[in-house]
Amino acid sequence: DIVLTQSPATLSLSPGEGATLSCRASQSLGTYLAWYQQKPGQAPRLLIFDASNRATGIPARFSGSGSGTDFTLTISSLEPEDFAVYYCQQRSDWPPGGYTFGQGTKLELK
Amino acid sequence: QVQLVQSGTEMKKPGASVNVSCKTSGYTFTSYPIHWVRQVPGQGLEWLGWINVGNGNTRYSNKLQGRLTITRDTSASTAYMELSSLRSEDTAVYYCATLASTTEFDHWGQGTLVTVSS
Image (cartoon, rainbow over all chains, first blue to last red):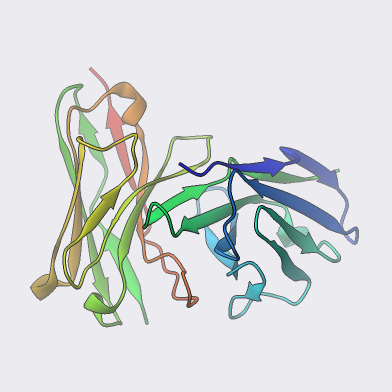
């Protein structure tokens, strides 16, 4: 199975600062990577799909980049509502139909 | 609007099986696969498996292969997950979801808490 490793595990920042979250895959994914945000008691919310495509309604301060094995989610200027847990998720071509999530990065208020 | 509505909270004893349903509306059920994802309280997301709703083909995570069965009833626009031989470590919130792939069609159920305890 493909393993996704997210770093850092926890990121402590203040509103207005920029955030950079990393996701590394154990084998090449092409651009088959998505990013989700999850707040306590809620289902995850899609932010980015296919590595760099922002989902409808997601603010422009969220951007995704990368391909192959290294991916990044960037939040340009943190708003109070951005403090949450972020997960990357892959869908692999081989073996076909396999999906996995990273272990998550908690973005907390400093 | 698109909705995925799951069945309610379940409490089971070790060794039992649990069935969770996921009733969909607001889109063509056979156009998108349904995935199942779980989350142990306080921990991360774990992908469990998916079903191609159009042809019924399934794929399961290696970890749950043999204990997990995903089915669907196209006439009822509903997907089902059955997990057998339950253990305490299966205690989690179980979600159904469409999960984005080449499109951003990504919708989640509200989650179903399954508690396994003697």
